[in-house]
Image 1 (cartoon, rainbow, N blue to C red):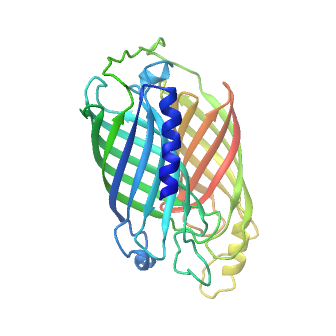
Image 2 (image 1 turned 60 degrees about the vertical axis):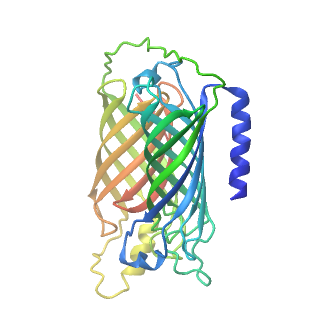
Image 3 (image 1 turned 180 degrees about the horizontal axis):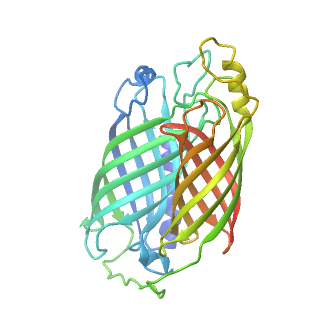
Length: 365
């Protein structure tokens, strides 16, 4: 806990010396663990609590895209979470985040939605001998996302304000190593915010110089992705996988595009999973020597400056045997290097079961 505070103080001291258009927040939360399966009952020993500390930098339209999103904040968060469980332990996390405003910036009362993505460290992951009940975390290092919808009242007492709302926190290792059921928490938050501006000043927001009307022809995308993962059988072995995707997208406006495409999944863990299960009576697995899958999908891309967020829903048109179901969904983050090339990171899951975290590079023509 002290390390979290020291890190935040370092970020605060650096940021304070650089800008007077930012603010800091401290939030306490109290919540409930979402029970994802009957096996998770042993993990539920209490209500998780913790704190989130964040630094937020305001935008004023220095870049054209900022007006399109009502001048969002961007910033960094650090979190501490106590699951109140001897099995699950504690979680320390760092994130990058955006704050999106639903209300006019002229008001001191704001309704804000935050989305953050980052890395987390679990203190007590699965161990065959000492902690074999922790099916949520198979590794110390995990990915984590959090979403926060909250009310914020600024400058209630000088530069000090209050904030309160709801938070959803997810953490898992994205099936890099089993077990990996992950952990989801819903929580109530209450905290304080402090504006770093020395004086009360009127902020001037710069309107975008871009035309509101935007058109673009259909674009074609080709992406190669890879990573490592393990099947749901603990100890079955970590292996690399490969994904080749091709899809078309059509921009609807400056913010959004719709997608339609197909992709090939080459996953060696499927062969290992099949070979282990085919020896078990009554598994009902049909005989096969082909372990690749082909999916077709529809999706949406949300453009935020050089970043974009992809959400897709897919269906396996080629599906050699039963493994998690034929429907899948993905959530991805893309960073455009230039007008054509981009890098991506994507989480693929089947409902609440993550299968892979994929790193890739692609081209949009």
